[in-house]
Length: 166
Image 1 (spheres, rainbow, N blue to C red):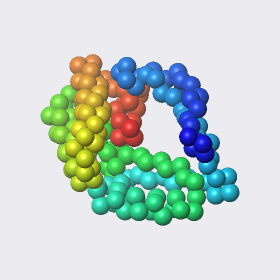
Image 2: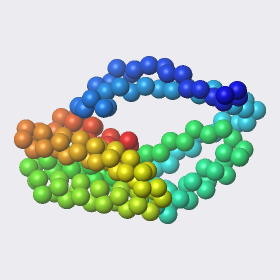
Image 3: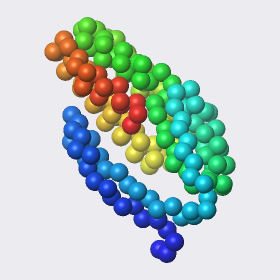
Image 4: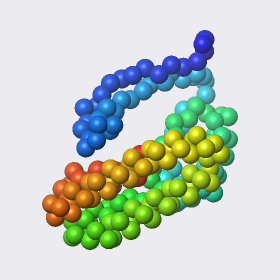
């Protein structure tokens, strides 16, 4: 369609992840539709995405900003998520399987509550729920490997901690 931007794939960064679905990471460049509008980068994370009401507020901020600027929006982990994922990794290293399970149970509940509050469509809830289950499974798997090995390498710790950013 004339006037619409099309993504151009830049390529694979060559990153390796423990799961096949994470191995092919590509960047996309979008041509700007109106070079007269300023480009604005907005980053949100932590308490600004702590729960459904705060995320809803962000949609209002982003919608208002989009009237005057081309936007790049970056969203990082919800409040406390990265710290709890690191705690899960350290608990796995010390053999505390019960603590690991409790952390993932709490994180799953936190994310499910947000999805249930914000997603009106059952198809969207299903799609996002599937992705969340995959990510939680990945974290639990990595923690189980650490439990068995009784060691958490920096690569495994970083892989676990990064789950909240995806």
